Amino acid sequence: AQSVAQPEDQVNVAEGNPLTVKCTYSVSGNPYLFWYVQYPNRGLQFLLKYITGDNLVKGSYGFEAEFNKSQTSFHLKKPSALVSDSALYFCAVRGLNYGGSQGNLIFGKGTKLSVKP
Amino acid sequence: EAQVTQNPRYLITVTGKKLTVTCSQNMNHEYMSWYRQDPGLGLRQIYYSMNVEVTDKGDVPEGYKVSRKEKRNFPLILESPSPNQTSLYFCASSNSGQTGAEQYFGPGTRLTVT
Image (cartoon, rainbow over all chains, first blue to last red; front, side, top):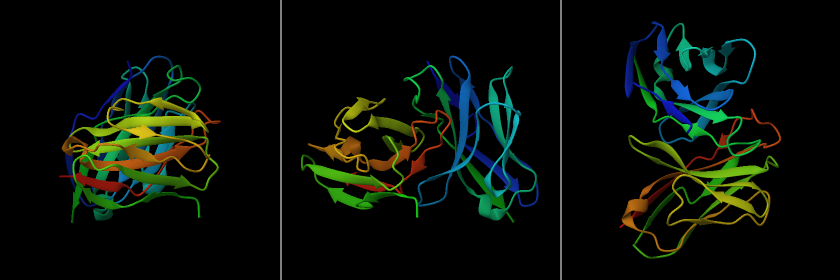
């Protein structure tokens, strides 16, 4: 069965410091991996995705994520955090062989990122 | 502007009173889905639709119904709401022709059942 784990409920970072939000996954076949961000009272917004190719993926707002197949991880990173990055972050996975060609996204439980000035 | 809209945004109702939450997208997406978000549980899929007249259960379908008569609309129906359906609901859509396509989410509907 597919699954996604975000081991940290909350991550606290000082503004200007690098941040990492962790994600590990379990899926049959090659994974499609996604990160979404949710700001207060808003829907989820797409940040970035890994489909194939370069293991380092760059996305919106200066975020990037590194796909590590051996560790089955897809950690979200940013070199220098901003207070405005404070939000809820969700990792999601879709397995190629699950639910046909489209498959369904399986979401992690979310990690709250708090960036302090 | 490409978007997914949901209505209403907020709803307070009583147990057993049928309600419908509408969802509409203007991107001509084939795939649409409903999720509920609960603290500590993340997003869980309720129902999804691969195209018009094609719907299927997600992980938590009990107590919900959906229909997909038109490509742009995917309403969520609670025929007899119960307090355990108090939650934040999101509709999403994507282009199912691309297996790596990201989903676009609506703004959410906060439902309270008393």
